Length: 247
Image (tube, rainbow, N blue to C red; front, side, top):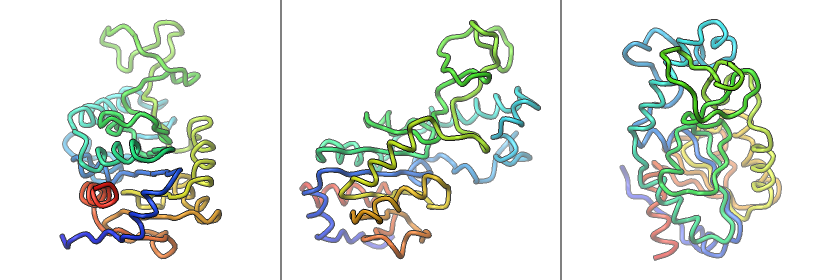
């Protein structure tokens, strides 16, 4: 990969910023070895597309199949490790007076890296909730039934992730949008910028005159509109940015 050039102007702006928002997508998790959602399935799951398994109707039709698929993905996420991109965002949060991390990822790698203020737009695969009313459930009896049931209501349990056709968690998008509107700098990191409504957050910063930065190996629909484009993987670009900004 070509040497990464970090603009001095960006470093100065970041050093003096009071409010920063970072939006992360599947790219930063891919650098930890996790396949992106739309990548080809492997092994037992090769005959299914993710879209066939990530809807409420799919769960109604075959709850065991969907539960087992997410159990497989949950294990992959548990085995993955945070990478230098995740860790650099922890450092950035320590340096900036007000820092908000918004992620489209469900793997929990940001929290494992040490990030504490994280808005999870699409949920978290390590949490489980009731299918009937979306209430989080932390304990249930392991009796061999798949999927398990809530010990209080007998509802089937499902992963706490947003499926196709479902709304984002209440308040999460609104909080992220307000932060994007008010921030000095908005970072779009490792995201294709095609999945809405998350892809629209950077527009809030653009409309209100904030600085925008895209960190991604390839072009996105936002590339021509942002203030700075840092072309490369987050695990390489972010540590360089941190080092140059706060040497």
